[in-house]
Image 1 (cartoon, helix red, strand yellow):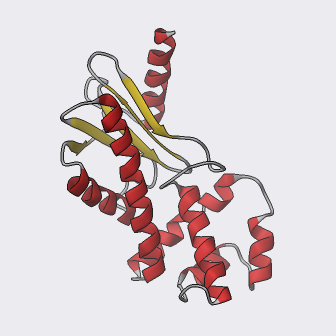
Image 2 (cartoon, rainbow, N blue to C red):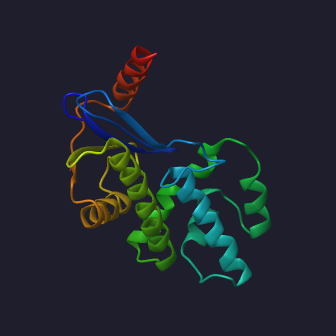
Length: 194
């Protein structure tokens, strides 16, 4: 965000999009947590990878490279062990830790992994579009933060492409600060409004 105005889209373990205008109007979309709605997050990608694996096992979905990648990552040998490992903890970062495997499978050309990335890129674009509409701006800069968007990932690439098609008025720009500093500034501004 330039001078503290614009949008920030964060996609790491979780996801959220926030924005602020020059006159102090704020908006947010997402950030509701993994049990309700956490689109485009590491958790969402990890969950979608597990869904692809069990559907391939059932014959409800195509075979996917994700099956071998997930089994190796979690050191499990069969679907029963995979399910036990999935429910072994309530910590969402455990599921989110699988998100790099979706990137890896996507780079190998795995059709299911590429579909997961595409679906989540579209969902992240929806977050940005919601904030854009709430702020009522004609043009708006958007900075991408979090491990899934701040690196050269397929998710970032597909998000930027989708945003350019759907919302060319939003321009991706480098962030002025890191995610922690941005969160602190946002919290400070919210406290001032009370």
